[in-house]
Image: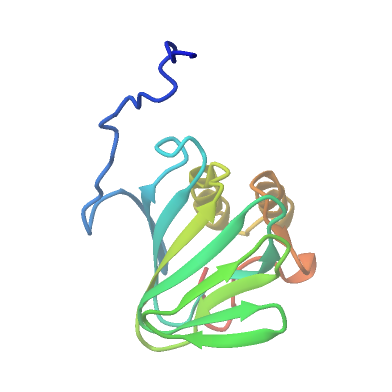
Length: 176
């Protein structure tokens, strides 16, 4: 009879959980958008990224794009978010969950007069925090440089469907 001396059946328990309170997490704000990092690439060994987004009224979150190496899930917490997925628009209300697998074109915006809040979940995380920091830096420049924006997008596995209409700016409302 074989004995198991190498501990294959002995779990080593750890206490490595992180609890983020409702207003917790590293927060970035620019213009009409704020992002709070809830679960980061570093915390999850790049397996999961969870980010809380607030969009002011009439604000674009992202124009139509897709990812090659990660899936994205939208969870609507407050307000109504217009999700553009493929060729369809969905007016997502609180409680809506939209799972967007890789290679699926998608974008999102707040077309209403009230602030909208949502949670974005990326799997794997692909160091998405660097994307958000770079996005805020790039979009705060006047004028926004399309080549720099595209370089940032490509670095973080975001590929615009239409590079002539990729920057989340609407001149009529002066939003980001």
